[in-house]
Image (cartoon, rainbow, N blue to C red):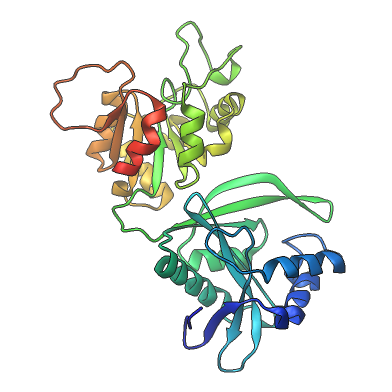
Length: 335
C-alpha cells in the first residue's frame, strides 16, 4: 500500500508484527471498550487470520499497520471490511500514541485509499458508548451519529450501547438521508382501528417494506417522517417493533417531538436542521401528494411518490413514482 501522508504509512500486517498485535490485544486501556480479554490461543488464531492476503471482499480486517515514517514506530492497526458497498472502518492504537492525532490522520488515510483504490464512497463505524475519544475522532473525520443500539454488546459481563456512525464522500447533491411516511407507506393504516397504532390488536407492514428497508438501510440512514397526531416518538417505535421494522429505522419525526405537523416545507426544513444536512440531500418517500410529496419538493428534497393505486394525475412535474415497494431500491439508485 502506498504512502498516505508525510508522517504515516499503512502497510499489510506480517509475521514481523506479532509484538504489536499481541500488545494491542492485552492492554486493558485498548480493549476495555472493545472486547473481553482474549486468551493467548485466541490472539494467535486472530493473528494468523489477519496476516492472510487481503482484498476488498475479505471478511478479515484491522490488518493494516500504522507506522510513523519519521520515528519508525509501529502505532497500531486499522482497516475495513466491505458489506453491501459500505466499508465498516476501525482502528486500534497503542496507548502511548493516543491523543496525538494519529487516529484521525490514519482514518483519513484509510478513507482516501478506500476511495481512490476501491471506489468506496460509503463508510460506517461502530463505537461503544463511553468511548469518547473514538467518537471525537469520527466526528472530526466527517462521520455523523445515525443510530443508537442499546444493549448491543457485552464486555466483562456488562451490556453496552453501540453508537453507529456514517460518512459519505459523495457529492453534496447525493442522497444522504431517506425519509419515509408511516401510514400506508411502511405500515398498513387499518380504517376500522382508532387510537395509537402501537395499541392495535394487530399491526401489519406494507408488502415489500421489510425487503426495501433491509436493502436501503445498508447504505442510508432511514428516518420516519409522519403526521401522526396522537402517537409519541416512543409509541411509533413500539409499533415499528411489533411489525419487525424498527431495526432499520434510525429515528422518528412527528408532531409531538417537532411541534409542527407534516404538510408544509417547514416540517422538512426542521428535519434537515435537526440532522445537520442540506434539504437537497434528503429523499422523501410517501403515498400522498399533498402531505408527503408537494411540501417536500417545496423544501428542495428529492421525492418518490408511492402511487399504490397507479392513480392518474395531471401533474406535469414528472415526479418519480412506484406502485410497489419492491421497486424502491432500484428507483432510489437511479435518482
